Amino acid sequence: MIGIFDSGVGGLSVFREIRKILPEESYIYYADNANCPYGDKPAGFVIGRAREITEFLVKEGAQIIVVACNTATAAAIGTLRAEYSDKESQETRQRMLDLSGGRQDHIMFIGMEPAVKAAAKITKSGVVGVLATSGTLHGEKYINTRDHYSNGITVVEHVGKGFVELVENGETSGEHAEQIVSASLKPLLDAGADTIVLGCTHYPFLTETIRKVASCIAPQREIEIIDPAPAVARHLLDVMNEEGLLHNLRTGAADDSNREYPGTAAQETAGTGSVRLVASSSSQILDRLYSRIEKKELPLRP
Image (cartoon, rainbow, N blue to C red):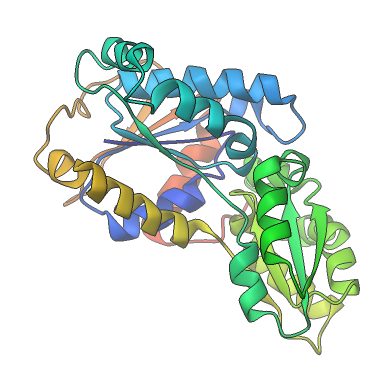
């Protein structure tokens, strides 16, 4: 079973890409929407939530975890790997054996990374814009990536103010959404950006609105929008293959996916593995967005 978590529904943009290449696997998705957004939370708080959610997912049968949140990746993935992935550590091995009921002695994590490298390769103007949360933009992982791949190009950044809230409210199109998007996108386009990196997993659900706004602000410029989720999905596949998890998952080993748990909304898709959705608060928008992903009816509308 593949575990996926985010501060809210945004990680479904990553789940969507993973499901395309791993349609037969089973999934448990955790939306921590009671604490969303993570972007303005202290790093210690995010680390604490990441630990709690990791342990919940492991107990429920997750054999690998995708941290489908840029902010949580920046703040917590180093801690998670140190505490749950190091199979050379006896303390880690015992912790994981206890959490998993003896099924596994470590768990691998797949994180998010704003795709500055990809953007640097395709920009024609030499200016790359990055939309992300404050937590991501100030994270060491992002800063190191930006500095490594920005030689010869200019990287301009802006927090997508209000973007997460739009998606969490199910409002990804319309005049109000366009106004919110314009306020954060315009500074990047005014600086000459022709490539926009989406540095938060919520933002891909605003892609059509971003395109519409960009065409109004810079009508003579062809704007490329980069979503890192497909690359994350491919990396997950590689790691699962290396860890021998593709075989284990497909044969149903240690798969408790048919059980029900309090606060869980279970969804099934014919011919594929199960998908279980869990929310720390109301699951209404999570259920709606998942349903639209399955039916390929995006963008989500109010």
